[in-house]
Length: 505
DNA sequence: GATTCTTCCTC
DNA sequence: TTCGCAG
DNA sequence: CTGCGAAGAGGAAGAATC
Image (cartoon, rainbow, N blue to C red):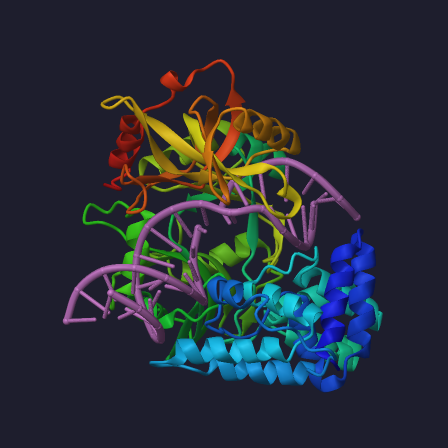
């Protein structure tokens, strides 16, 4: 099939409102793809290149519009895949240039519509309002099978291309081929958020489970005898980064395992290290990371995906009590709140609240798991704002935040945020900022420091980029404050106090 | 050889 | 990672 | 309720460049 058909389908999807209509367009295309190109088409329409190209935003931007664009479409899906694979295989000195040339060659062979699609695909910004989840639905539609079934296969396979090939070829029978398999990582189960334990109790009902939420990185462990591998949240193989964890798993008294947990580093006092330091340990050989296990998907020949959570936790306790994440099961509001406070006091980022009976719902951000994280709120002044893109085009969106420096009377930039703004806020802030414009460049409008935003954030980070040496982690706007002037915003000292309390500096 | 840029990755 | 909007 | 897209922080690896 011509690559252009996929590119045109992507454009059609982007221009079509309505999820069902997008799914129908996806299904119509997928039904027509030749057998050997089905996996490729499914990946591309999900926004996945399928390779680590070593070609990213800068290269795509540099080459955009350079090649005139082929008059007639000639690239097939197979040919594009072949070229992607060739680019991904390049390495060593000179490979950067070779990659750029190869990508340029691909652009030169592409029509204008294909060039646009290629650039979006390579930088991972398809923006067609449809990604893997809609491709799953499209596969179900194309073959008349239940979407839920296709979805399950996708969770287990972690690769939309493989699922597309199987479902399109064999329908229900194709789906049935996917099962929980050692060294085939499954998409991790995800959580929604709750403000506090009271909300979690209200939403999940009691009793529920609360466990420490550790500020490390997600790890899925697969063990088959001496063979042990670890996978990240995005299913990358991170085995080599966490040798201590691998050895700990080796010692566990089970031949076969699939476990879900969090890897984190601890300081000499036994307190968890800040996230930045855990990530540094990850890159050091023998960097001494610990694993806290919070779920078990398989123990020896038992698959536990559909087993109620409390039984999966019991399996962890029986198998690896030293690695089981601290947990309490309670329906009592006071006990739940106390457990949360204790988790914070121990230096953790919060708690996870989990339903006792839920299966391991791989890949879905369901309501069975709720994360409750410590949130800080301070008031900062807006120093500048950047023009938005996509549905925020025409609005000043991403704002630069500053804390007051009482020593100098100036403002110290601590980072940016585009989060938390409603359309009404975007409309309002655009007018307010433009009315206070001091200067501008291509993307940024610098403003008089007068608008005060209440900003929520989770942590303070060490920064080499920002002048105060500190930055905000996961900053988002809560509201604009018309009751406060810039002279009253929080100080860099207040931010530094948080960093010190958290052991960040 | 040292620094900078780009890409990829974690949250 | 957080959040708001569209469906 | 689900899926998507708006774009943030740092850190490391590898390639390019000074």
